[in-house]
Length: 149
Image (tube, rainbow, N blue to C red; front, side, top):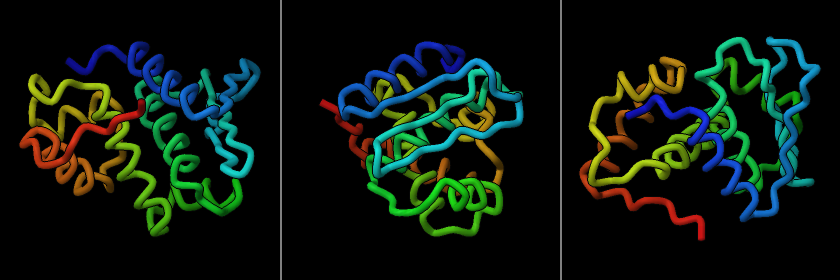
């Protein structure tokens, strides 16, 4: 169920397109260069060479969430917040990113298995409570599917 990484990325691109978000995938980046977003310009730079390919869809959803949330901060702050996990802005952005990824899946067929979902998208362990809450609500039908139309 969670093996369609390229399809999820295409879905995320369609969301970005609907919201006039520019995204770039420069091929010359190092495998350790993190993605970034500039909400004020509605731009995202993704790294197609990222060292863990499974992380890319969640990273992309995370950067889209920064823009949809109109976060007012700078690129350095994003990078620091993602890695230390203490920023409220990053916490809410990660919650929104989980919801965005979940919106790819049909509520009637998705399985409630937070561990498998996290492994499929290489979501960091410190986000397990968010994934558990959002996946549970989504599967139970108490969290509506995000509509990007």
